[in-house]
Amino acid sequence: MGTERITSFTRDGLVFDVRDAGPVDGTPVLLLHGFPQDCHCWDAVSPLLHARGYRTVAPDQRGYSPGARPRPRWAYRCSELAEDVVELIEVAGLGPVHLVGHDWGAVVAWESAARRPDLLRSLTALSVPHPAAFVKAMFTSSQARRSRYMFFFQLPWLPERQLTSGKSWERSLRSAGLSSAAAARDAMRTRDRDAAHGALSWYRAMVFSSPRALRAMITVPTLYVWSDGDTAIGPQGAALTPRFVAGPYTFEVLEGVSHWIPDEAPEQLDVLLARHFDAVGPTGPGWTADDRRCLARSSA
Image (cartoon, rainbow, N blue to C red; front, top):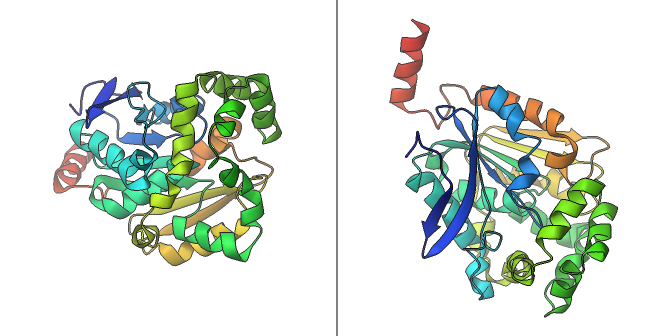
């Protein structure tokens, strides 16, 4: 299936929608959205990667795809979210991929990289630091204050009411830095109560996280991008993240950019991604012997 367009994939009876675009024979870049967005958060980034010859694959993740909304909150624990990613890569024959995640998508990307580094050429995390660094920052900095909305999301029904409120939720997204158009787009999709419940379940499943998994070291080439206008994620987690990356590591700060990096700074992100992907090169851990032989033939 590596040369086919993917429109969906199935795991454990759940059906996930996928947007697959760009050169079909290009090196795949797997894009993971965060809360409360879906694959459309990459709309400004994907065409830039396509112009560089990359193929982009962006799934609507668990809770966001209408066919993948289990009810129990334990079904949204991070191990399950990461296994969804692994299944997509393996079933679609995509690997190894450049894995890029924003917000909660970054959390899933960190976990996926720890679990299956063999499926990745590289990892890029946007906004959210390594999970262990984030937890430590919660106890040693202002991060707990920045993350107080997470405690509100643990409550029954009230968070769903906020997310389905339409204009009120849209205003909240704008106040966090989203443009009016992007806020309207994302608020519209959570007006559906099932969609809101699925999105909130990621937060409610945090209690099922494995402490051991949180501390897992990352060995693949890693780029972490943080923006200094982010009201949700402070600098302390970024400062602690290198402790948990054993492979090549690059840290970049986007100045004057809010939390919503793919929407707000697609051109800057494109440059950083291209530099990161190029640095991995044909000798990177994701390249197989067949890849190198193919490159040698094309260069001859």
